[in-house]
Length: 177
Image (cartoon, rainbow, N blue to C red; front, side, top):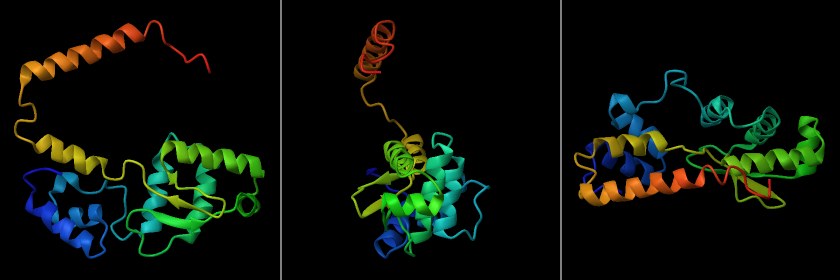
């Protein structure tokens, strides 16, 4: 957490403690550059907001999106951060017209990307990957002097670049792939 919080951030955290979604509260109290994208409707429900974000994620294959769409019907309002829904691969397969194994693989992919977590035989949690990324990037950008020791920082940055450069020609693919 930043040492110097903006007034908007403090108000948003207060609202979040009272049950509001932090990012929504921050949009209300925060600066215009951290507002939601224009493509997002101002009156969207949390379910609609979730589906809008899911649709725009190019990393999620269509079959996984269809499965998550069906699971989103079980959203519990209010949906602040994560929403646990009932899950059965068999029931989901029947609901979306897919093979049960294909459903399992689709949910595995969604879990790997970050749209699903905490999966059990009877439930899973739907979530937004990178949900607060823009907010944290905005905070980082506002830090006046993020690097306090330039020489140490440059040393580590160059060491990282050097190590990555030395790995790239030799490790293009894992032997397991």
